[in-house]
Each structure stands twice: as structure tokens, then as C-alpha cells.
Image (cartoon, rainbow, N blue to C red):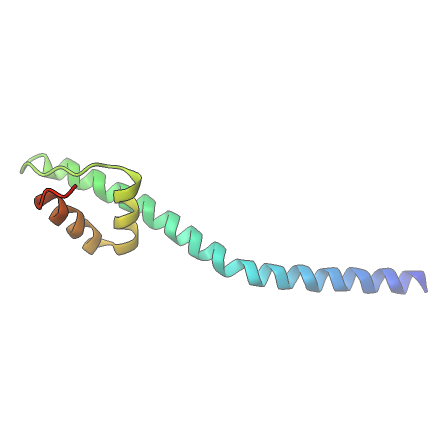
Length: 89
């Protein structure tokens, strides 16, 4: 009888662990995507600075700009360049 109770407890904990994993998986996926996009944003800013040196365009490489580029993509780069051109940044 004790073996059956132990098996039942193990099954209940396994089901609870599975439910927790399913619930947490979605937010972790979103966070990892944001981090990946931020890293891609950093790389895009470095490329803009490298290629922009030939035509006189430079953008600060920092976390704020990287997150903007990471969230918005190419329009984020355009937004940062537009704000730079308007002398807001």
C-alpha cells in the first residue's frame, strides 16, 4: 500500500512539474526573443557606425538604441537616425 501512495505522489509531482513547464515556457520564449533581437540590434548599430563612417553618419551604441532596434528592426534604425538628424538624441 505504501508503494502505491509513493507512486501516486510521484505521478502528481510529475504532472505539476509538466504544468509549470508549460506555463513558464511562453514568457521565457518571449524574453529570449527580446534578448536575441537586442544582440542583433547591437550588431546592426555597429554595422551602421562602420559603414556610416564613410558618409559621416554615426549612432551611439548603447542598450537603449539596441533595444529600440531589437524591438522595431529596420524601422528602429530609421527612427534612431531620424532622431539623430532632428538633434533630439
